[in-house]
Image (tube, rainbow, N blue to C red; front, side, top):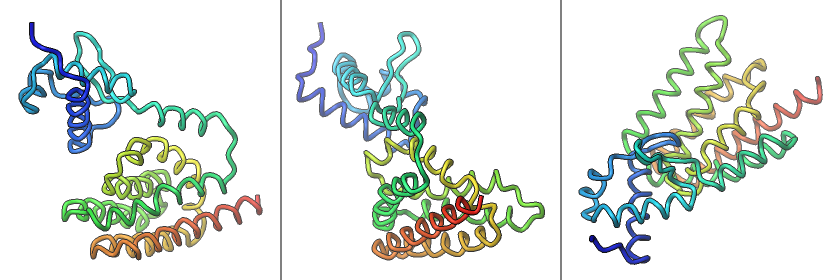
Length: 232
C-alpha cells in the first residue's frame, strides 16, 4: 500500500497546487487537471496528492466531486465577504473604501510584476472601451463590464494571493459602486484619460505613481457618485 505523505509534505504539495491554480489563472468552478497528470507534474504519488487535495478542500479552496474530479472553489473568506456585501446595506463610501484598500496596493504590485502580455491585454481592454464610447448611443452596460475588467485584470496581475482569492467579491463591489457614474456626462472621458495614465505607469514599472493615480481615479469616481446621489 503506497505510503501517505507526512503532514509537512502534504502541506508543501498543497502549496504547489495553489501555485498551479494561480499560474493557470483558474477561476472558481474550473476543473483541475486529472489526478494522474497532477501527480506526474509534481512528481508525487497519487495518495500523497489526494492528501494535499483534502487539505485544500478543508481550506475551502478546492471542491472534490467523486467521479468528476477536483474543482477550484471560491475560498471561505471570499464566500463570507460576499455574503456580507450582498446581505448588508452599504453606503457608497464603504464600497469605495473597499476598492481603495484592494486596488491601490494592487496597482503598485502590478507595476512590479506586469509582463508584456499583461500590458497587451490591458491595452486591448482600453481600446475596446474607446471603441464603445465612439459609437452613439453608447452601450453603457458593456462599458461598465469592460471598466470592471480593466481594474480586475490589474488586481490579477498583482498576483497577491489573498486579493486574488477575493476577486469575485471585488467584482460585486465594483458593480455596485460603478452602476451610475459612467453614464454621467463627461465621466467616461475622464475615466479614459485616467485609465491610460494608470496603464502607462504600470508599463514603465513606476509602482508609486500607479498607486497614486489609482487612488486619484477611485477618489474622483467616489466624488462623482456621491454628488450624483445627493442630487437624486
